[in-house]
Every structure is written in C-alpha cells, then in structure tokens.
Image (cartoon, rainbow, N blue to C red):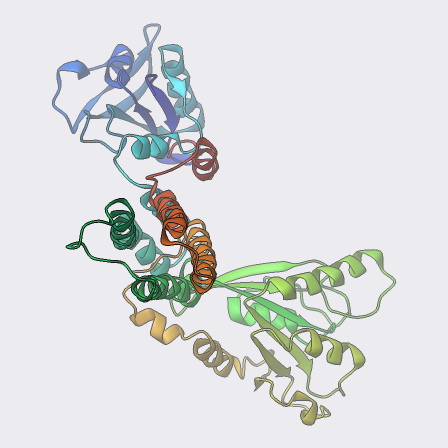
Length: 451
C-alpha cells in the first residue's frame, strides 16, 4: 500500500458537485501539483481550500479541496478530496490528470480495504459500511449504524474472551498437572461452560433470523392463475400502475417487481406470470419462473377468484405453498362465492377486492402480525445481521456439535482444545483478526470503486 490511489467517489452524472478522492502518502503532494491556490503541503489538516485544477496552463475546473492528514483519516493515510462541479466530462478530466501525475486508479472498495488493513476499522465495521450504503429503509439504516459503531465487534470480542479463558484453563491443566493449587477442568465443568457459550451463539442466530428482514426486506411473491387479480394487487400495494392489467389471460408473462417501505421494513413484491397449462413458449417460461420464485420467497400471497370453483391449478398452487409462510387472498369478494372453503382449512385467508382496494388494510395487518413488525420497530437493533458473519457463527456451532460428541466418547481434553481453538480462530475471522487475501478480495469487491 505504498502507492497513492484515486477514484471518483460520487455517482457519475450531471449533479451539483462530484468528489474525486485521493489516498496515500503522496496524496497532498500530487494534488498540490495540479492545484492553483494555497500550497496544500503547508495547510493545516482537516481544512478546505478554494482554487482551480490546472493542467498544461489550462484551468480545468473551479474546486474546493479538502485536506486531511494521516493518521486522523478514514484510511489512516493522507487523504485529499476534490469537490468538482458535477459534470461527467469535468470529473473524468480531473481524475485523468491525477492519474497522469502519479496516482493509481483505486480498485473496488480499496479505500475501505486500506482502512481495515491500517487498523482503522475491523471487518464487521466494513460489513456495516456496505450495509449502510445499501440500506433502503430507516430500520435498515439504524441496524447498519449499530454495526458501524462497533457493536458487533464488541459482541464477538467478548465471545472470544470467554472462549480463550476456557482454553487457557485446559492448557494449564495439561502443562502443569503436578500443581495442586490450579483450577482443575473436569468434563462436567467443560460441558457447563460450553453450554453457556453455545446458548450465546444460538441467541445470535435466532436474533438474526428474526431481524434479517430489517436489512434484507421481505421477499413477497404473488401467485395464482391468470386473471385472478395478481397484478391489480401489486398495483394497489405500490399505489401505481406498475403491472399491466387486462382481461386477457397471460398478460403477465415475466416477473414484475416493485418495492415499498412498510412499517419501516422493505417489502419486495414479485408479481409472477399466471400459472396455467399453456403451449405458448414464452408464457411457459414465465410459469416456470413463478414456481421458482415461490421457493425463494419469505412470503407468498396466493390469489384465488372468489366467483370460480377451485381448479386443479389452484389446488396445485395451494399444495406447493402449504409449507411456506403464506396468505390466501380471495379476490373479487363482491361476487357470489363458489370456492369450497373446506379445502382452505389451516390456511391464512383474507377476503379482498383489488378494484376497490377493500381488504388491503386487513392484508397489511396480517403481514404485520406474521413477521412481528410491530415488535421489530421497538427493538434496539443491536444484532448481527450480516450473512458472512452469521455463516461463521453457524460454522462454530457445527464444531461445538462435534465437541459434544467427543465428550460423550471420552475424548481427552487436550484433543478438544484443538477444536476450541479452531472456533476461536473462526470468530477471529469475523472481526478480521485472522483473514485470507481471498476473503478480503471477495468482501471489498462488493464496494464501489470510490468507497
């Protein structure tokens, strides 16, 4: 990391301003070469200076330049941010000039990667930065901010501390068996301590499952036969004509998507093609996609036509969704009912009319109860919700299962210490105490170039 990197940190397009960010030992020196104004190498840290970017005696842009000197910066390196006018040509030209004067174009996420490698943040905080960038609701923003404040790091560090105490006691017993005044670790002691440790991991995972929807939203799939009102329901939820609605069966042939913030949680709606037997190749592909989306959904809304008897297709859809979190919406409730309700036993049923928007409030209330959205709004957001971190926690639980089996089989404690230290290392991977180059490349490749 001896070189100096630069990148455009704002979305490239027509806007009031755009920011070109530079980080590295020579950041101030390089920008100073092309800046007409104060000598940036003599200014105080964390100050802003007016002037021009000049190249080959030509004024390229009128700018404000922020100078931040190491180590009190995001990357703990010298950072300069050039606030340009927001034109595409101007911003690209400023970037080109910096590249011609000794900077290297930053890789995706390289600024954040340097912040991690220089000890400014840990990997949970890097995860939280990405979650904060991607947050689409207020609840998701709050969750990400808790991670950025270091809450996840504190939790994992505490778990590692508890585990290293257990490992240390085992090691002392193994290395100094002749001493009578040391604490002797018995199998029963170890089981008791590992049970408490396991409960902490299980609690993290259960909280993740309960609050994952805060950061990811609820993937809601609308399914049913053609012309039962799927697209109309989507349009009512989104309060816009997102999907085309006609009386012609098979109008929706592909997936139509839309999102709303509902009780502070993102509802990602997917309106699928009407499910029916068809010889139309395009429509057939759409029907296949509909069934695929059912498997991926957090919530399935099964739409039935109130004034039609249940068909084999309806029954097939009901069967395929019986084990999913689902709500059966009986549409066109103003017409005479011909549905055999006995075939909907043990299903969550709502009556509605998508033309008049009746039943929509009942449906919203049912979704709120199904996912405990009222309770989620009251929570303090102190949870781990990043999938990478949770995968590591589950990996630790699997090793704990192996340890439990070993204890039942009277495996010596010194053998178990190897597994315990493996868990300790895996927890270290969550916060970045241990990492591989492949992990960093994968993690930071998800960031934009200027972050």
